Amino acid sequence: MERIEGSGASQLVQLIRAIGYNSDVSIELATVTNAPPELRIKVDHMNVELEKDDLIVAQSLTKHKRTVNLKSSGGVKLSASSPPLPAPPTGLKVGVTMVQMPPGPHDHALSFTSLELKDADQTVEEAELEFTDELKKDDRVLVAGIQQGQTYIILDRAVMY
Image (cartoon, rainbow, N blue to C red; front, side, top):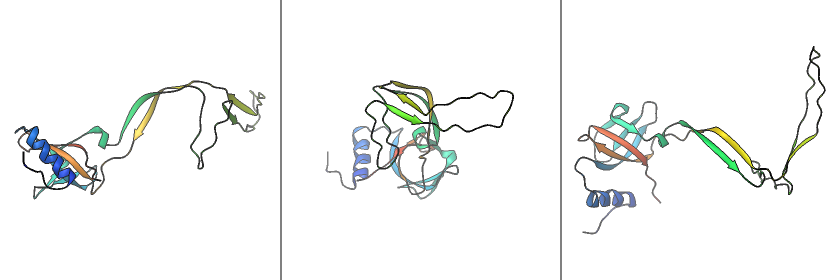
């Protein structure tokens, strides 16, 4: 095999072509020229832009939601503020402020000043995560051409260091 020239991404494309050659699929680099929903890309060796009707996009590059289960054992640690809050040695204490509602037929007195979770295991079932990092103009992407170049699959972002 001869020496491969070019940038890291170009070398990767050349290596995939040389080792895993498949005449039905071509791996190319492209640039996003218009962000979704009217997605368009320009493949490096082509003179025309491909429009959304010519493209299939990997879900990880789109805005989407996923359902997950989250578990934490051995207490709770908060680190949402800057600087991070130190974790209390006995668990989590939460202060609550009660608001007086207008008088009505179901007046009940409820009063407490804190809630404490000591070394508690936490489970969140069927939490919904929303991924919002979709393709943007000028993103570099790896694409696979299929069906004799009639359709392109955007596989992932191409990152060069």
